[in-house]
Length: 264
Image 1 (spheres, one colour):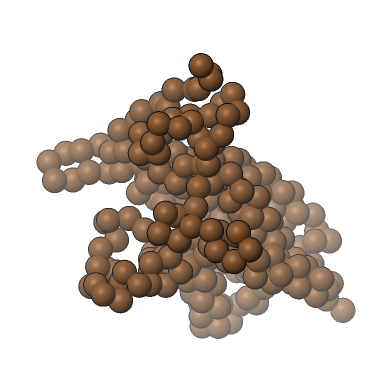
Image 2: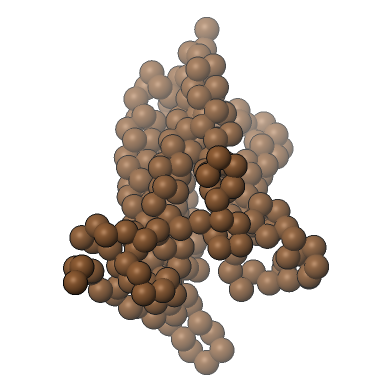
């Protein structure tokens, strides 16, 4: 019999008081935004200054809306367009789950560009200070996926394979933990090293590009271990939707890093 690690069954609901229920997934969003906001307040003050701390406080509302609206709209358009065409009102049922990182990222980019224009801030410099905090939410979100027993990996015989409650009897990669390590921990360390190098901070757009390319590569690799969505399966050339959406991120990130120049 193949050795399999038991899946640690954890109640997806952290606290339940009457009709109120706080889920781990919601807590991951809240903690990611709060911790990211606290760190970003220190990063924007690094020379050359990207924004005041009061301006960053105002941006938290914008980025929260960008995450929620963009993430939901991205899921609807990228992953289940056919379903929501027949039942468009269910696109508003955010409590039923279904969020796309790529959609949330686009939502935050639009919110940041609009905010910087209104405030007269340099968009790339502002993005360089905000990008290093994003992996906090990404890592916590992947841990919440693991607790929920969702988005599990492909069938595997590795010694640390797990049998997930909703994944059938076969042992699978705990791919949520792989992605938490790559998209969360490793990407956070790399970006926060870069943003603290004065010469890198002078090259506006470099850290933003490093985030886009870094996440794209991490997601591309992670998808090789993750089971693709059942209603989508494998797409062009055997790639998953997550991999196809990550390719433009890698390209955009590389362009930003190559074009980043120190000010004259």
